[in-house]
Image (cartoon, one colour):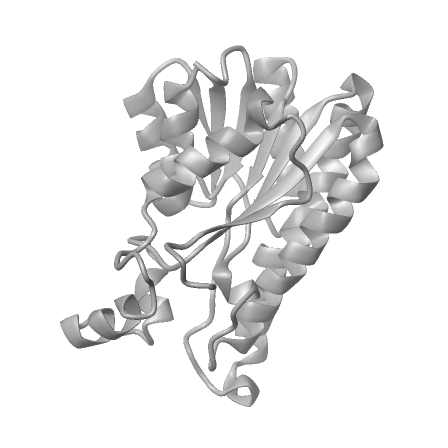
Length: 249
């Protein structure tokens, strides 16, 4: 029970890597707010996990919605020990100049602006307590970019830099900030990364770039997140951990 008596907010927690993180945190003793734009999905997972979990509808690109999320978590839990910025979107693979302005804005608002909004809403609370852990779910795309995903790659590179600068600034306040960099996994975004098609041939080509030979799983993300957000990692901050089966080597 490595997260016993801890409370957490996981954005994008209703599915994919976020759900894997939520399940692991609950199994390790945490109380978790499953925050997702898919409110029904968050409610279903919360109902499955029982008393330690609660659902919250949130649009992480909206300051008012993020503020309401944090307010609800503080009302329910009394304190928030852990924030996981997991919510993310991509655009379909395309030449950089062909990505629509609407798709660019969506990637920017969900993948970048959200990290600012959650920090604005929650960091003052963590500073007041002199403790806290923030985990940003970035991507191997921010370390080893792939063609035709330019603006998604860039958003995850931004998140990696943001993680490091947040870590440096917040360390004296007792707040640790880390990131995990998954490779593609069995999540709703997988089809997007493959260009809208998920055929055995395309999948085999993608897997050939991962030395361990499989995709990242929600369980992999949950295990890495649990360590980085636990007291076991009390000396770890500013780390962007690849959880990618060797993809970035």
